[in-house]
Length: 113
Length: 109
Image (cartoon, rainbow over all chains, first blue to last red; front, side, top):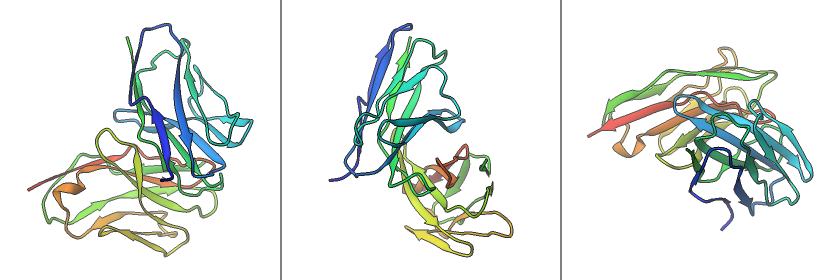
């Protein structure tokens, strides 16, 4: 079955540690996205990538980094510079970046203490 | 850039009641419009979409019509079920989708 996988479902880290969230898709989509979701805040765009080896900052990129070495994979690193990293992180993909529908993964809930 | 405003929730209804969730947007040009649904602890799923003015998207009894003149895309359902309890997001298309804050719907039997 085609889809987007995110792992793990739940992740716990100590403050000051970097952590990498995995996102893989087998839909052959060019574009991939990372969103952060906080209660009452909706979804906010962290980074997006329209093509391999290229990515752009979203609205809240500070304290995060990404890579896009393969079409199928778009990992997100939450660095120690991110002041409030505890959140629900959602990865998505779309056929292209021209405003079409996005397909979402199940999300990773990160808790930093 | 694009933006979207959804009605504040939570919306609490009894089973078989009529549902309306308002959504208005600002956008450059005429983007596709989407409604997504999120069940507790899960990612978002596309509920319906409309790609041009006057299009009506529909799925699972939900409907929304692309109103260019009022820049709106209100979600409606004639008879809600308990299983419809979830968070609903309106989103105009763009380089990345722009999401509203979401409207929580709670349906009781």
